[in-house]
Length: 138
Image 1 (tube, rainbow, N blue to C red):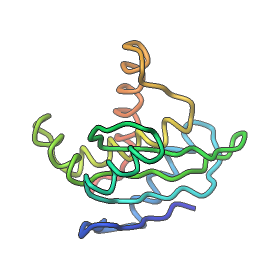
Image 2 (image 1 turned 30 degrees about the horizontal axis):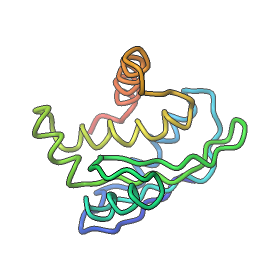
Image 3 (image 1 turned 180 degrees about the horizontal axis):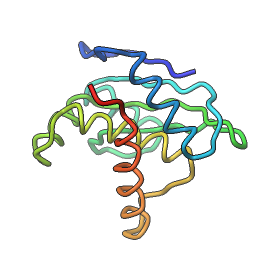
Image 4 (image 1 turned 60 degrees about the vertical axis):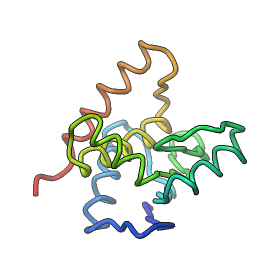
């Protein structure tokens, strides 16, 4: 089950559309869907999570906590809407596109993809692009 939680003014326009897309992303990796919670927040909220749980004192767009068991993907994905907006501006893409990239990124981590090395990061970017194409055309 995909759930959305809001710790900021932002809300998805169509939660069902996004939940169905994330379900497709999971299926496309031959994984099973468990309980995945997206928590949309601001920079202050996310940096506090970063400090408290990861002992990092930096801004980030996403932090994911993976509770997956075997093939069943589960976890909490925290996304800073402020960071996503800034990154969309920096990368000259629409906010919605950057948001989908970040949402897919969290699930891809649960699938076992990493992004610490350059090779891993390149594979992660290819996978993000592939999964974004699964989003229904509106």
